[in-house]
Image (cartoon, rainbow, N blue to C red; front, side, top):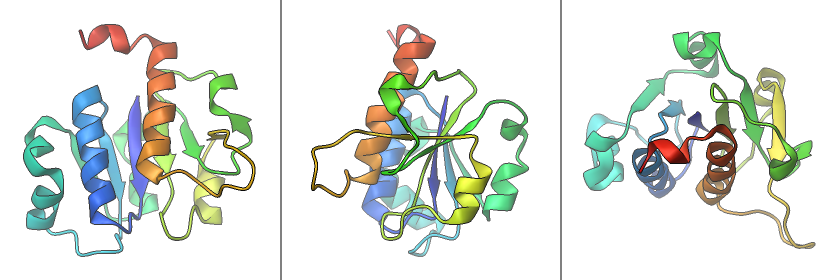
Length: 154
């Protein structure tokens, strides 16, 4: 199970995603360009003291991400407010990568086209969205439950 951020806009969200990935043992893919300068120093600052505990892989573009060896197996599952399936009704697999769109603009058409599935977190009517990393954490925990990944952490 992997987590991917597509062109993140907010450094603090990248930091939260790094911490999430480190704590739950999920590799984190960062698909650039980012909405902020992503230097090694900025990445270290965002990660705080979790950087050396997380496996973060940077990709220069969506095309580079799609051609990475990790993409040879598993599906891209887009987590979006208008996802086709409620996350708790989706059957996750161990090779899946959960892809989170941009905070400011959501997911563009190219990301929908690249994904094999899309899921959503149900919310109360009239509310727009969860924070992107919070939504990712909700879906990742269910995916880990379904695939038995929690048992590997204790």
